[in-house]
Image (tube, one colour):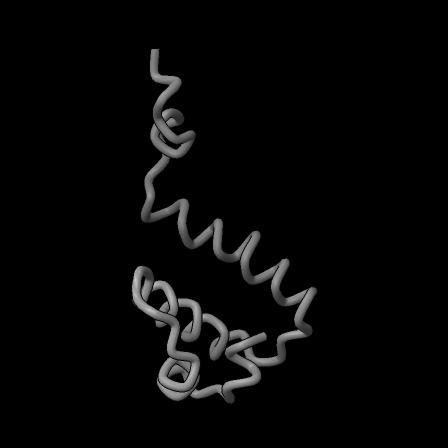
Length: 76
């Protein structure tokens, strides 16, 4: 009956509670392991800024500058 809905809604989960857990579990943990991140706070800022620019042309120089990281770091 509700097979067309994403699991988030199918199971009655709150998006406000689910998203931070998803980011912490998958994005931060997995990316941190792969890239050997040192500054988690700066990475979180980078992710928020990048998410806010979804659908726009990627301007690494502007993204890096706004997030306070170097362009090679933003590219990685």
